Amino acid sequence: MKVCSPAYAPEQGSLVLSLCQAIAEVICVLRFCLLGSNIAGDNQDSAINDTTIARVGVKLPPFWKANPELWNIKLEAPFTLDGITVDDTKFNHVISEVDSEILNSVSDIILRPPDSYKYIILEKRLIELDLESEASKIRTLLQGLELDDQRPS
Image 1: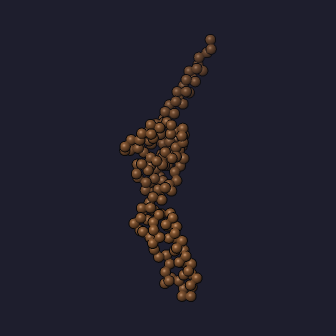
Image 2: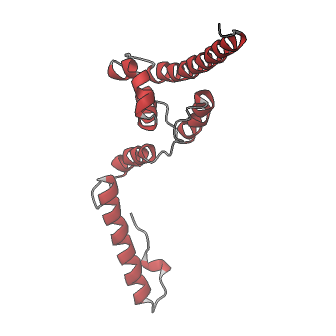
Image 3: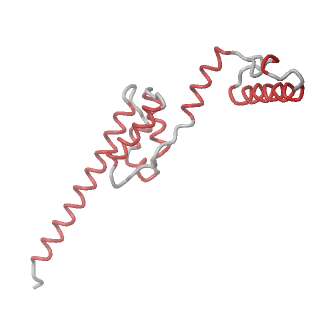
């Protein structure tokens, strides 16, 4: 990969040419360190490695206990923007963002994930947990109302 060629450097600008060559060498070394490709430049490997690096760098929102359904919608945006469509990748990203308390509630899926649709099944279960939590809160409120109506004997 040529970053700078002598045609672009001024005739008496040997310093500029040296600087361009040094920058090109630094770029090659960085490419080697980050992408694992050879210094000469292996275009075939770099396309694969660029994709891998983009997927590793995905920034996801932390899990929202208060509203998992809305969190899931927000979670889909980075997946879409970064072109992440693989079920396993999405599944693993979600596991990395959910705290241990919630993971305990879905441990059956995590410990024995289904062969397909892991992400969708986990996503639905997380939303169901919120619905169960809402139902529990309503039950608690109703029980409190029933006790308030009774007079002590």
